[in-house]
Image 1: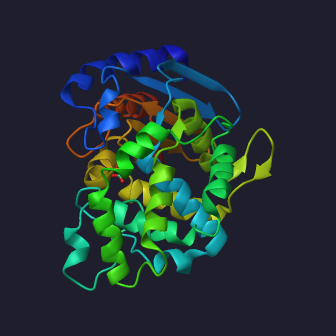
Image 2: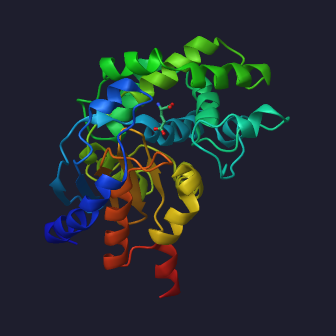
Length: 306
Ligand code: GLU
């Protein structure tokens, strides 16, 4: 893979930016330019290629759920996490209430809002500073910080997530201070990253939890296996299965326009394209990944067949 291929992939994806819209339910996000598109790829050998708006800062949004999940698994273990959420695709939108409101059910998985908010309660003892330093380390990006404008914008428009959080409390899935949990969840969504930071994170996930340049183990292998499986099955909300068929890579999207993709054993990929489809996934970003996966034969199941 080289930069010429990334350029072709962005050219292939570009028309699809017009088929989506930037998020507006968090008003600050509507300021993004929906035509922008960028990509960065980091191999486990340490090489990097990039193209387009790969240095643009944007908020990580739901891709933080991957880090939260991995950190909660690492520090508190499998049972602590999966007592709070199941591990099934929800088939519903990212902030759906319907699937958990009427029954005794717990959230479908840790990568939808309800499950992620429940998981963040586990991280309260780690706190914002502890999580910030973990995120900076995993993303190899010391400049990651809270985008205060986006945080305030989401915080003052978080009725939906607040409802979910209080519903979780009513089911005994949040024991502590709901507002504190929600604040940390929203702060972690408001961290500013680039496609390069996501590619660095993907590189660590692709390399079984070891940061290739330093040789430091940041996450256990079993944590990586669970996290990647959740990404493959649930990472693109109610578009997860179609994306798995078309692209076949463990991935996670965010409404800031980012997509994190992992080619296990090979590379991490970060994509930025803030124009979103109706499910909240980057419209063009998905097409860019589809182009690359098809051209380079990266689909993980396709490879096994060959
Ligand atoms: N902060 C966003 C929310 O909770 C994240 C959603 C997303 O990126 O899909 O609504």
